[in-house]
Image 1: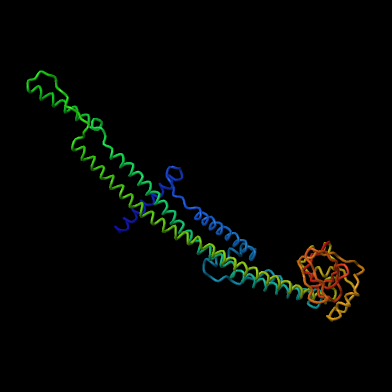
Image 2: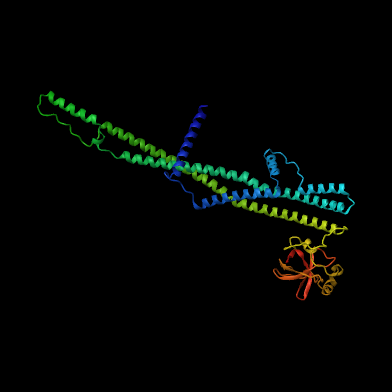
Amino acid sequence: MDFNMKKLASDAGIFFTRAVQFTEEKFGQAEKTELDAHFENLLARADSTKNWTEKILRQTEVLLQPNPSARVEEFLYEKLDRKVPSRVTNGELLAQYMAEAASELGPTTPYGKTLIKVAEAEKRLGAAERDFIHTASINFLTPLRNFLEGDWKTISKERRLLQNRRLDLDACKARLKKAKAAEAKATTVPDFQETRPRNYILSASASAGMGTRALGSSSPPSTPPLTGAPSLPCCAVLLRSLKLWNDEVDKAEQELRVAQTEFDRQAEVTRLLLEGISSTHVNHLRCLHEFVESQTTYYAQCYRHMLDLQKQLGRFPGTFVGTTEPASPPLSSSSPTTAAATMPVGPSVAGLAPPGEAALRLEEVSPPASGTRKARVLYDYEAADSSELALLADELITVYSLPGMDPDWLIGERGNKKGKVPVTYLELLS
């Protein structure tokens, strides 16, 4: 108990000294040890990394889970170290509603059949979304959280220790400065008449007068001679004071050396941690690539599922997929199937299947009577065979569709040349 009380008193004294030093620095009454420019740059980069990592993490969580209540629930489960319960995605819930509606409205009717097919596609989309969320959480969100909850907390702790070591160092510098000033003042011997007490002078004069009268002399009492030399007791006091200040200066210098050593050691530890931010950037870059790959896989699956659904709906009687042109045609190649469905259709070329005859038969194909559309090429494309048309980025070509063609392809014309072109390489113009 006694030891704990001493430690508590010592810690309170250190805290008070740091508080005084910090306050004086804020008011400009004390000197502050500045860090070098490279160290300041490392600190600024670390703070920027932390801030942007937090923003990216929060927004990615919103992307993966738009429902704020669900995000709060997942956060609580994570903090309680419990497994997050499986949650039905919006696509899966929509598929469930469509299947129930089809069973009630009649699964044999055209509307019921379409509902069942769309429900199956939405269910597959929901499963793909679930896989994407799971993969993105493991490969992208988890490393970001580990940085904020692990590495950054360690860096923050070492930075606080460095701040305390700097305050201790500056306090030791101030203490040494004051001790040296007091020592210099003590080494200067003051004038004796200024330092001798007034009652001592009066008592000395009275004693000299009494001694003269006792001898029967009629001469007035004389004042004892005053010199600038201090008396022996005064010299002893001065020497003792000078020795005390010398000891105080030695003690302050020793404390300053210790504080400087601790500050340098802590600065080196903090510097190594801050330089490790570069490794953090490399790790986050790798995680970002994995996130993009998982997102690409997810959207590719969605595109494939919707393409299959469109083909299935096109075989159903009473459906209108690809038979009417929308009010506003697509402006880019983001939905190639829809773009292909809205293209003017020309005469069939028997599927364009035989590669040997494809180029010859394409020469005989003429644009449809309903007209054609212009398209801008987004990327360079090298033709795989004679049935395809090579493309150069930013050039304009004329495109149209033919019955029986793959919806991912169109017929493109440029001058006297024509051939199949991939829809994903085009931006259809109004």
